[in-house]
Amino acid sequence: MQKRYNVAMTEEMERRLEGERKKHALDSIPETIRFILSEYLAKG
Image 1 (cartoon, one colour):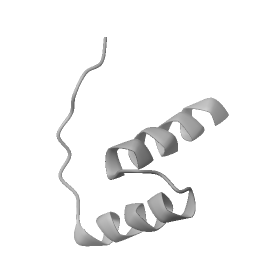
Image 2: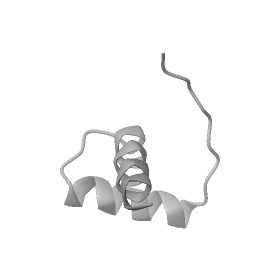
Image 3: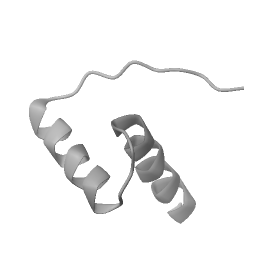
Image 4: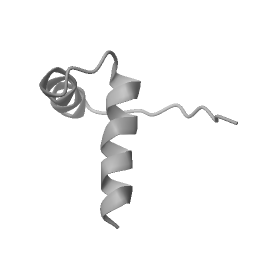
C-alpha cells in the first residue's frame, strides 16, 4: 500500500533535486525523492 505526501520546498531545494534527477536519469522529482530516501535509509 502506497501513501502520498505533499511537500513544500524552497526554490533552492527544487534546483538541487532537479540536478539529482538529471544526474541519475530519473523521470520525475517524486522518483528522485524516493531514490534519495532509499539510499539514505539503506546506509542507516
